[in-house]
Length: 612
Ligand code: C2E
Ligand code: CA
Ligand code: CA
View 1 (spheres, protein in one colour):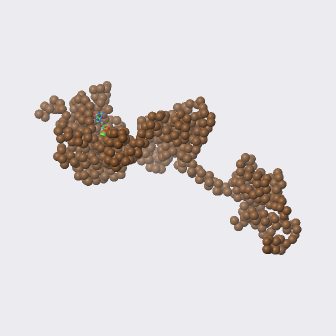
View 2 (cartoon, protein in one colour):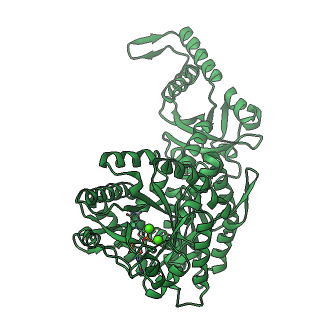
View 3 (cartoon, protein in one colour):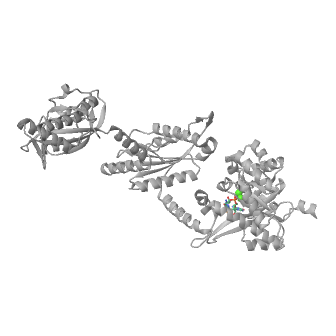
């Protein structure tokens, strides 16, 4: 700041100058007498200081309305590009060019009018038209009669600071990766849209777009790759909306669109379909072509909610519904959805406590050998003894456990409890059978899965032969290479592996051959069709049995409810069955009882003959 002079100093200089020039007398400050020589030197020094200042300075007349410029320093000439000669006698207005509509100018006008100090941040323009942010200070200068004769204006170019501020604002309100508005800005825009819609009785639509299975992209292309894919999607979505709409990034793989609509305008469903279509278009990345799809939830103001959070939450809920339906589609919010979401929230809260409170129990459903008719295994199926809602089935809580990650501790509990129970029955002298435990996706993708199984078996002292894992076909096929690797480790322990719900996913036969598995479990939808539907599903059952045997795998049918189904399976060489026809899932005590009783399937005549 060596070269800049503060306003009070300037005022003093001007005052001194006036006095000296008019009266040529010695100047006194309280207690100090200054000789004319010293004074001349002081004035020269101060004048030089103003001339040397790095900041532009202007002295104007105090005569309204012109406030004409009487002096500018070299820094002014340097920074604005205007020479002394070009500006003397002019009003400072020209520095704002055509940009006269700046509210901050009012403060400067008032300072001039009221002959007081004032300061403002203004957009000023150089001679070449380029803009700079100017923090302008004005101060009145009075003569020795106390009459304001001039104003001194000092300029501070704060363009760099302003740009940084703008950058920070951008960062605070935009997503770094896509440059789209972030949650904070989205809320703000939605708030404004709602205020306008309220005033003009128009509508606002909120779309919540969630990419399906984006994790697979992450796993296949890594973070950098998935970032690029997100950018592609963000660009496509932005191109698909109108200028007046806002597209924001909400979460990792989630976007929100706010669409204000005219009062009578019914937002074209076509707009929603267009957005889904742009997500669906093939993506070429890393030399590969692949396809993404999305689930979209839609809410409308004012029907579905009057507040920002309500509209966003409900659109999110509707998107979840679309996702659960497995649709690549949009879903409007309904009141039932919110009720269901509330129920899910309660379940989620209770689920967190259920393990400690020991509210889970396992039921066991027999798996029966179709040849011998004897039980040779059991599937452990979890139930939740809810303190208020009674016995809950997996359909009420397994999805929530999976979404929240609570499935990890729950699954670990199931494994330990099932193995412990099996061991206990063996120690009680009951026939040795295997126990099948269901594994979900999150559990399956845990690190060191095989080691954790080995530890459980070791702790309990159960032979690996007496444990089987059931994994659904779609889970395995969602990342088959990874599945092969993990299953190999599990298989190496000696634990058996069964492919659950077989026939509902899309197994590639070439992969099926590579999977280290022991058994296919025919999905019950095919079994239930035996003797009922058009016979197509019965034919599928036979094909699965043939396929399994060709691959040297055993095959079990689930959901067997009738004698007709049983006989069909037997005739076609199925190895095992499970279903209500033999037994529903049973509590541990009930299961022990039928195991003790030696309960077996009625044998068919041919089989009985060959055994007897
Ligand atoms: P799943 O693995 O396909 O289990 C078979 C389901 O079919 C069980 O339903 C069982 O009660 C039912 N079931 C058995 N026999 C019949 C029959 O003859 N007819 C009909 N209609 N249904 C039959 P549940 O116990 O409600 O379990 C549903 C699903 O929940 C299971 O399907 C499984 O995917 C999941 N699940 C159950 N326990 C666990 C667990 O401990 N961990 C995990 N991750 N998932 C589990
Ligand atoms: Ca199962
Ligand atoms: Ca199943």
